[in-house]
Image (cartoon, rainbow, N blue to C red; front, top):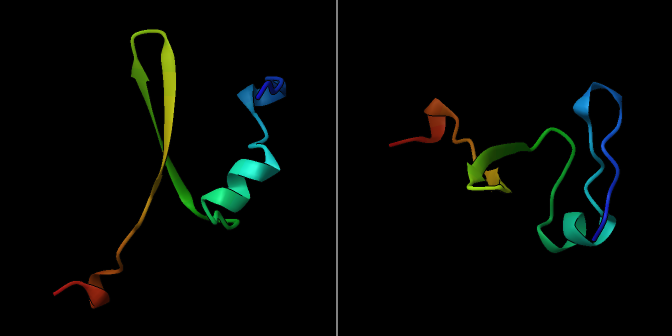
Length: 52
């Protein structure tokens, strides 16, 4: 899938990916680099009150 880099370095995640990963507004995403590739992973943040 091809997307455009917008002002302020923003991109829109394609709807198919959002649905497949069940992403919701406010979800945290981790960005990392692997040589010349950008890797984006959803991250589950656990509230301290829910940790054991």
